[in-house]
Image (tube, rainbow, N blue to C red; front, side):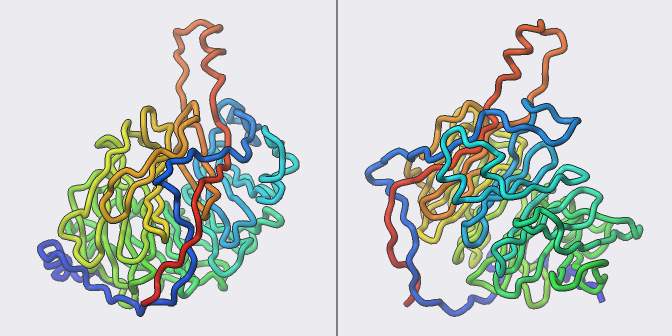
Length: 405
């Protein structure tokens, strides 16, 4: 039976700022990388690809092949990127970091997979370092092998018209390994060990009915599991942010009024959201009390592209698409939102994503540009010279113990 949303619980949650999610017992202390913001040492560029990455799709020119997203594998042995040519590339970290600049794709890309449509989202499987799930608009979910670049499993979800539906957001649960996929007005819980058609019993409604004004409607743009709490957060382009109880899959609290969120990140009791409009707003919430944001930060020029935000175990919030033209990466204090420094700011175009793995930060550059049909051929040729490079940086810092009692 499909899990239904309790409308009375949603109404009560909107007036009560306390989210009904139970905390999980504290874990033992572990080492975490702390960014050296006091000395404000600039990040060192380790490697960079050429400003133009060759396109593998005939319909996309090399100059238009910007990289949309990047994500490190759980063991950091592979860096996955999603490009405008509908291709998922798996870069070998060892080959990429040891190569010269510009890094040649032929010797640093372990494998690649060209999708039938534009890629919506990518998520690494937490219990295997070489498996990543990708979603597309009207295609099944593919679980790709980084070693071969081919699907190891396929999951087919269907909408209410029994048509193949592609999720707009993906997230693996770090505790159970199940895949949670977000669609328009509903979620789907998927068992990765069972390939094929997804059972309807795993479908989770985020609104009581399709015509109801209650609950979370619209395109579900991002999902983030909250490790220290038995719950997960879901963002919608309909300007809502919901926190759900993982045990019952019901909405414990619903936040309204924020701009459309494109990306969520969570750590401990902190939930950070990256938004379109409003000067590239970044908002931080305490999941124990969601009545109002803890702090907000305007990165600078707004963008409609999905822009990343990351919360590190050391208490830093790393946000891409910051500064003039969205060409910088800023770091703020997770507790107060105070700016700690600008880490990356040398790209000649929008930096939409910064994938953080301890001291290694990978940034993507580029965005869609529209040519002026009235411009001269010489001016149009100059406009084609863009910065679509993938760069890997090493930031300064040290490992210190966090967590525990």
